[in-house]
Amino acid sequence: MSTHTVTIPENFMLGAALSAWQSEGWSGKKESQDSYMDLWYKNHRHVWHDGYGPAIATDFRNRYKEDISYMKTIGLTHFRTSVNWSRFLTDYENAIVDEEYASYVEDMVDELIAQGVEPMICLEHYEIPAELFERYGGWESKHVVRLFEKYAEQVMNRLGDRVKHWLTFNEPIVPQTRMYLDAIRYPFEQNTQKWMQWNFHKTLATARVVKLFREKQLAERTGAKIGVILNPEVTYARSTAPHDQEAAHKHDLFFNRMFLDPTIKGEYPEELYELMHKHDIAFTAAEEDLDTIRSYTVDYVGLNLYFPHRVQARTSGWNEQVPFHPRYYYDPFDLPGKKMNPYRGWEIFPRIMYDMAIRMKEEYGNIEWFIAENGMGVENEQRFKNEEGIIQDDYRIAFITEHLSWLLAAINEGVNCRGYMLWAFSDNVSPMNAFKNRYGLVSIDLDNNRDRTMKKSAYWFQDVIKTRKLKVEEEPYK
Image (tube, rainbow, N blue to C red; front, side):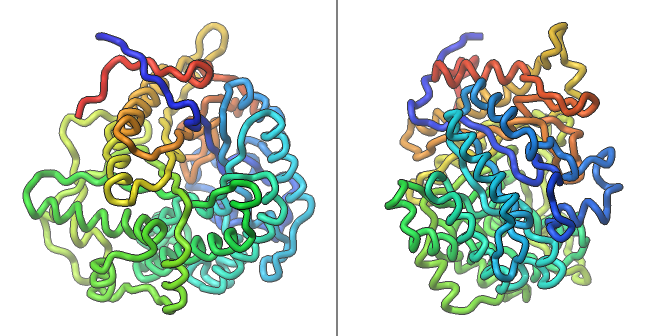
C-alpha cells in the first residue's frame, strides 16, 4: 500500500480537550456547589461503571501543572476545557464569585499561556448547578438563561484579558436528549416539549452571551472570538428512495438544524416550526428573544464528530399512546459490513469529516469552524503496554490519521476549517461509562495514584505537530 504525506496548514490548531467536571474532581468543592452531573452521580452511582464518577476524576484540580507540562511536551497548540459554573459561584442568583475556585481557574489559564498552549474556554459542559436544576427545572426556565448571562459576565471579567477563544456550550442538545427525549439519564422523564424548551433556551443563552461579549468589546480589545460547540449527527439515508431520503431529512431537522441554523443563520427552519406545532411540542419564545437570536449569531463554531448516523423510513406504525419522539419519522439503519469500534459500539466512517465540512461551506456560508472533538475510546488499554510500559495504541493513530486526512482533503477544497482538537488530552470520566473506555493521549493509572504516562499516540501526535506532516496510507476517495 502506497504512503503519501499531507501538509497541515501552518496556523491550523492541533490540540486536545477535556471538561472541568470530567477532570477536576471535587477537591475544594463546597457542599452547595454540586453540578447536575454531581447530583446524578450521587443519586445513581450504581449506573456509573465501577462506581467511578466526578468525585476524583483525574484530579486535574490539583495536578494541572503536571498535566500542562505534558501538553507542552506533546506540543499541543490549544487546550479546550470548561469553567465549572456550579463551582465558579457561591451565589447563583447574584453571581457572587467563589474566589478560591476562580483563583485556580486563573492560575490554570496562566499556566497554559506560560507553557505556550492557547486556552479555549467553554462556559457550560453539562455543569449547570444542581440548585438551579432542582429549583427551576434547569434550562426549562428563562430565568436560568439570565443567571447564565450573569455567570458568563463574571468569567469574562476574570479571563477576558487573556482568553481569545470563548465557547458558550459543549453539545447543548445532549443532556436533555438523554434526560427528556430518551429518558436514560436522571431524572429519567420522557417529555419532548421540555426537551424542546431546553433546546431553545440554550440557543437563546448563546445569543445573549454573544451580545454580552460584543458589548464588552473583547474582540476589539484582544482579538477574541466567541462561538458554540455543536455535535451534528452526520446523517445518511439507507437508500436514494424518497421515503428514506425524507427520513434522513427529518432526522437532520431535529438533531442538526435545531442548533446549526439559529446559532449560525439566526433563525429556525420554518419546517421545524410546522412540525413542533403539529405534534404539540413547540417551545415558548418571546418575539424579543427571537430578535436576539437573529441579531447575535456566533463568530465561529466547534463541531464534535465521532461517527455517522444512518436512518431509514419507519417500517412499522407509531404507537399513538407514546409521546412524540422524532423517531416518529425514521428508524435507525444498521449498515451491513460497517467498520466498528466494538468497545464503544460506534461505526468508524472517517468520511463524516469531509461531508460535514462541505456542508459547512455550501449551506452555512463557509463560516469559520474547527473540530472540537474527535477520538476513539477503547476498553482495557493496559493489555497493549510494551516492555517500557507505553500503551501501543496504533488503532488510535490510525483513527486520527484517517479522520484528519479526510478533513484536510476538504480544506484543500476551500473549507474554512481552522483546527482539530482531539478528545481527549488524557483518559477521563465519561457519563455512566466512567473510565471504561479510554480516549486519552495520556494514560491515567487508577491503581497507582492516577499516575500519568504518555501513550504511543502522544509521541506520534507530537511528531505530527512538530513537522506539520501527516503520513497517510490511503488517499481519501470521494
